[in-house]
Length: 165
Image 1 (tube, rainbow, N blue to C red):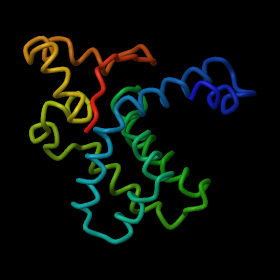
Image 2 (image 1 turned 30 degrees about the vertical axis):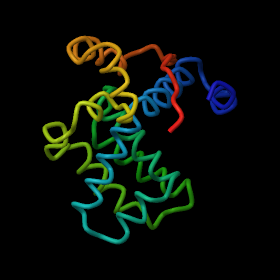
Image 3 (image 1 turned 180 degrees about the vertical axis):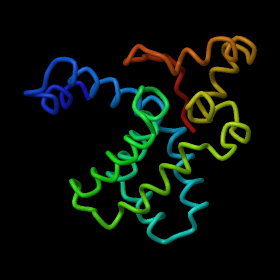
């Protein structure tokens, strides 16, 4: 990421490069949560094209980025969805414009996702890491400080004991 971002933002104004960095880092930070929401939204759409779009990795990342922008930037949902559908054509996947619009709108609406999500999903953590943090910190401390994992900085280093499984 640290190598790719300077190349991707070359020739842009510093502010635009910063927005790209924040969007990419934030999307990756919340990716686990966004992927669950995209899967639920594709299931709600119940169409083969929706599933095909969600399973296509570049489109999946595009949709996850759109969800991040809906939640963490002042851009309107309409603008974000329009930009995501335009991104389909730029990726050579114009067939995905309608499914992307449907899936991103449904996923952005949440449709009760947060009320059904477990503690690990709300913190955008894999289950094994959540369990390790609970065992080391205790559930109460993790509940108090866990949401900080979803905030800046763009780099987060966790030291957890590895185990052979």
